[in-house]
Length: 504
Image: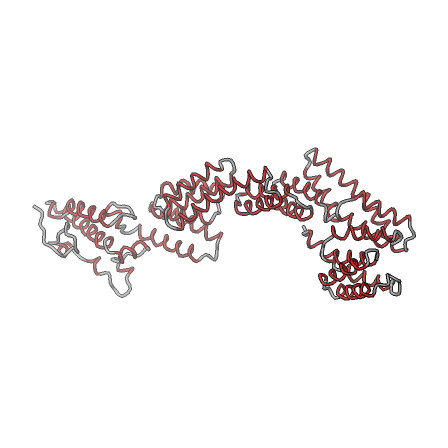
């Protein structure tokens, strides 16, 4: 749909030049004896032809001030107004021209065409009929007859459109109003009615476009701003909703509906803003709580329920609460299965739960919907490495700790398992060999997970003790036998070789 401003520009861009040509017919006509008025008119005409509309308008103002009864001054100022897209301002000047010179059919025809575009069909028809009853030129007669026929047809279609709307046949009403608005581009009422058709058909974007146009076409159109704000609010765009409702209050600070809605939107917007600031600061628990208040403030609009769920999904994932994160993310993704942010957050939660295949699937889906996201590609590669790693030795599983375990938890788990699986505790040769292998794994797990650099490499999908993962053969640890681990104190605070220790 072409915007009203674009239509106005296309329709009016040629007016100054046509009317300057028209004015040539009036060279020599006595427009008054005031020399200054004539100078203003002449200068205004030149500026109008050059496209310097504001300057031309200023000269026409001066000409009218100097001679309020000069019909040509009003006509030229009307032309300048039209070229500036100010059709409302042009109407009084054209009416004044007709008052001063009733036989000036061009002014009446021009006024009728503007009224037609404004959707004032009865007034437009009256002008066209009077043109036909006067002594028009052949071209004016032809134009007036054509416009009169068009106006009659548009009257009929608009009446049918209103009837269809009242019968809740929104598709038919919209179709009829589309035709009306092709000609009546400045008809605010028809745009508002078509907006209602769009709203009832679930086409909010088109409704907003028509209502915004209507807010500019009709002075003090608080109803249009209120409706646009409500639409944005129901779409979940609280920022745009707040912006539009403020425009309503600028026109009428005491508007009951606008003020009530403004308080609601402002409160909700502030809560969401605060929650996002908490997330930026890494205060995920507080953000979770704040988003809970958002649902209390607006429990009835699905868009905000979805927003809250998506942000809770993110908070739980970042706060190392994978069970809660997976639940929230999964419920949200049932509604928006291709939401990249939720897919990434759930994948991260899956990794925390060591569900690497599921994480890989989410990253792959996210990548399909955001092909140029380098971070997704890197996270996918990491998940693939972790899956491969999990099929070998997993140091977290060996010690029985979570991936987010603190160093103290790791040392405590290590000490307990080292005491349990020390080979000296076993007499049977088969059991001793099994214990030796287990003990080596426990010691290796402690070595990796208590060293920040090695742990970071392991969390990224690389085993720092695996010869296959090393660059330059740094994997000798993997080949250490039991004898090389004998004599160290599993309860020591340093490395595994600091103290000698024998179990009885």
